[in-house]
Length: 421
Image (cartoon, rainbow, N blue to C red; front, side, top):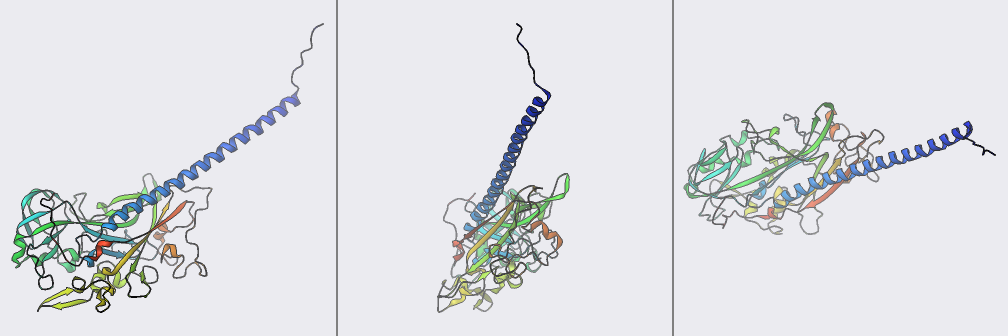
């Protein structure tokens, strides 16, 4: 007897196909979900890495700020800085900018002769870029309260394997006051070199500048997509185009959407420390180099005005000049950065870091203390590149308080190293 051969019926095939389709659909959805989660986590990791990179880089420079530099020009504050508008740089809603200075540990040269437009040193210098800040120090330091024994000057032309350094002769009143330009009036003291014989046998050291700010750039091939970067400007003509401007800045970290800086000042006794940049704005008198003019001077000699931070002790209750409103009294810089993802996620609304502080409404003076005095109300349209809310972007916020201990310098000094670089 022949065995019967029975195949699949149409219904069985349909049911099997349906079950298989459901299984494949489930596998596909699981794969898509896992892929999306991986992308989300990868994006989160990337923005956290960018934030840490930005904070670490700034922290390293801020901690060394003030070494060998007069305290009144160690830190310059620029609140709400619009790097793309040099005519009106301070605009609400934009990130802050901060500039710090410190002495180079590896450079020193002896001076043969000095004048307001030229320095001649004893040994050739391999390289100095245009815009480099130099500190000229007299050897007979003497009494700092009676005579000027040091001067900050700026190099006007690139130096390569030469003993001659040409100085920028820009009048201090005409020097720029911006993080994206050449060093300002505080570093144009070249006039002090004329008629003072001590500078003919002096010593020069380099002063390094680091200006941090945030700027947005168009993505190549995508004119409607702009990516923010944390930038650093050293005040040097790095591209050697004859001008010192935004094109000489270098990117530090991608996706840094906001930089907010608060300045915690010293206080006397049990007085609550003042925090500029939160409860009080750093615009007006505190903006940039204007802050330096707030230091109370002390009359010494017939024609000299010596800042009191050279002669007074920090926290001296009888002579509290160092407790006045000046950058000399900065106890800490509180740095807050917001990092966002490189590309928006069309299925994500976008993280919102402008949540209202408890008891406050969005748009009040302090929307959220973690973002200091940043507000998104009443700002220019182009400030939207730096508004940390919506847009489909993932975001992370990172904060650190940094103490620039070198800011307590109370006298200039000549390095004890025997040779310079």
